[in-house]
Image (tube, rainbow, N blue to C red; front, side):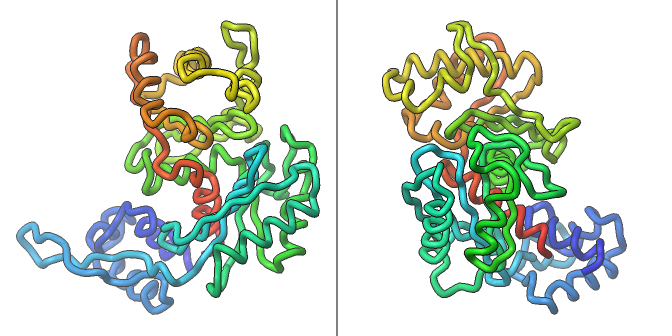
Length: 326
């Protein structure tokens, strides 16, 4: 697949172009060239026509979409202290199955065994093209290794090597906040948004900054590490929202802690949209709405719950792997 074909496929997969005319415009090529690219992608079984769009006075456009059955990927989220979750993602980005289980974060054999069980459970008889893992930590994507993590057992290349050996499949790893941001940027709460911050709560708290349509990584790929922010109560953000502490707090207390930390993020980054992912889904159904009301006293911000909730990170990791492997 050449660069033009890959770019066309990504535009269709990300719902940024749905007709030959839109592709021609986004690719800055002629209509015949765009049509030729479409034909080649269709011949490979990657995309297909899916009906007719609305006419604007000329020829009725033929709509294009990804062939969802052309590939399947499993996304696994290792970012929680008490559970491992997995999703099966088709090539169009749709979650077709999901499952979760408890596991021992300090026992690598248990991690491997439980991951294999989840992969089998969500994939059924479908052929899997790869496994993508989202975890809490800074990931060096060139070496596919974790350079820093709150879970020391995940550092280095331990996780990808372990799962590659256990499954015989290609395995990628990625920071879970960034994975969740990609998930919400394409089909989720941040769809069609050029800029937003995603705040992810799991074993730790982290964030990802979506700026001008892509992840802002920082100089050393560590942008978004907000766990060490010091709150007014004197606690680090990560400690204030630990699983043990949250169980002992009411919703109002959690709300105040979150507002304290996120006001610091907003004062530095000046985002108009915050998306809450991960364990935020375990709080009250209107938590995002309540948090927005508090933050809006000083900041013109919108707050949304992640559309894919607990599955955002697993879906995002798998979605990205689908783009890496074409």
